[in-house]
Length: 72
Image (tube, rainbow, N blue to C red):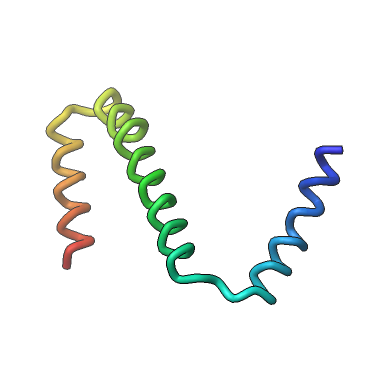
């Protein structure tokens, strides 16, 4: 039953995106939630794992380099 539901989700989602006009408020909310989830994964999962694998100095240099790369 679960495979059928997953198989059915793709065409229904495609139909919804194709024939329904999205609202900017809804789109902004979804993008904000997705951005918050990605930021929380980086903060609470990837950075502590990087600190365990390498020194804190290496992690800080990587974070600074990444912020500078995205800023310019």
